[in-house]
Image 1 (cartoon, helix red, strand yellow):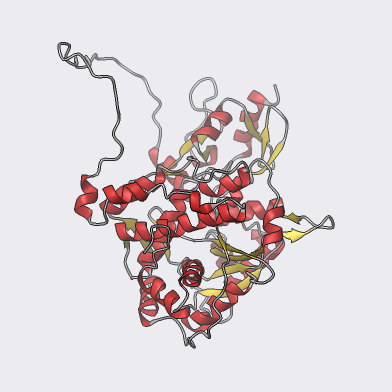
Image 2 (cartoon, rainbow, N blue to C red; image 1 turned 90 degrees about the vertical axis):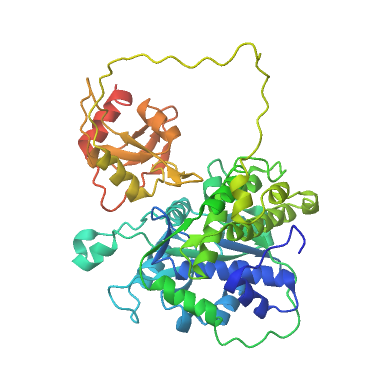
Length: 492
C-alpha cells in the first residue's frame, strides 16, 4: 500500500471494503464515516483514560455532482443502526444551539430505552447556515456548545428546579454528541474565520469527497459479526481505553507534530485543522481498539489512525487548491526507524540532540545540595483532583486540553479565584477553584481576565466579553470569591 493511503484496520476496515469492494478511495471515505458513527454509538460507555470522550467528528466536503450529504444516510443504512447500535438515538440536522439542545434531550428521552441507560445522538447536515448575504454563518453559541461536547463537558443549561430527580441526575452527565457532516464546496470556501475559530475547526476531520463508484453495492443486512460482538462488549459496562507502552511511544511521535507547519497554507483557517493532531489520532486509535473488543491501543492502531488523520490533512490542502502531492508525510521516516513491533519501538529514544562537546579535561561537576527551610501553604490535593476530574483537564476559559504521551495523558492547573495566603486568605475548596490551562491561569492570576457575576469571561485590557465560563453541573462557584478577585483588578 502506498505510504499516503489509509490503512483500513480491523473489523471497521473490513466492513468498509465490503461496502466498496472495487474502489479503495471510496472505501477510505466509508471507513472514516463508519469510525465517526461507531465512536458515537459506544460513547455512553467507552472513554479514554481519565474519562475523556473518544468521539471522532468528520465532515465530508463535496460538490453538486458528488453531494456530501448522502454519506451519513449510506453509512447509517449499511450499519442498520436502529437494530445493531441501540445506544445511538439517531441522526439530527443541527443549525442552532436550541436545535442542539432539543436533539440531545430527544436522545435521552427515547422511548425504546430503559430510563437507566444513556444514549448518544449523531449530528448530520452542516454546522453552517446561509445568511441573506449568501455567506455561511456559524452561531457563536452553537460553536461554544459543540466545542464543549467534543471536550466532554456538559453544555446543557436547563431549569433544574422544574426537573425530576432522575432528570437532574442526567444533567450531571455530559451529552454524547457525534458529528458526521456534509458540507458543500461553496460553503467550505466561504466558511467564516475569526481569531479563535481554530478552536472549533480543529475539532473535526475534514475529508474531500472523491468520485463515488458506479457499480452496485452489495446488499448489507448490518455490520459484520465481529463488529456486532465488539459492540456487545463495548456497551456492556463502563470501559476505559488506554495505550500500551509501544503505542504511547508511537503516539509521542505524532504529538510532536502539533504546532508544526503540516499544511503550508497562508490561510490560518486551513492550518487550524492541524493543531489537535495528537488528540485526533488517539481518538481514532481508541475507536479501532474498541472495534476489536480491546481496552488497550496497540502501536499498529496508532499507525492506522495516523494514516486517516494524514489523509484528512492532505484533503484540506486539496480543498485549498494546493498540490497535496507535494506534502510529505512527516512520520514517513519515523516509520522506518520505528516499526510496529514493540521491541523495536522500545529501543527508539526520539530525536538526537546536538550539543557542543565538553572539554574532557573538565569533567561534569555534580550540583551541590544545601539544606533550607521552606514554609508552604497546606493545600488539599483532593480538591484539585476533583475539579480537574469534572472538566477532564479541559480549560474552563478557552477549552484547551494539553495532552501528554503518558499517564495522566493530560495536564491542567487548579486556579484559586480568591488567592490563597495573606492578604487574600482564600479557602482551598472547590467553590473557590477553576480548572485552567497554564496560559489562562497566568492571565487570571495577573488580572488579564476576570469574571462577571453572570460568570462571563472579560478581557480586562479591552473590556471584551469572551463568552460564558464553562461550568460543570456539580461545580458550585461562590459569587463572593468572584467578586473578591474582580475587586483586585476591575473594580479598583
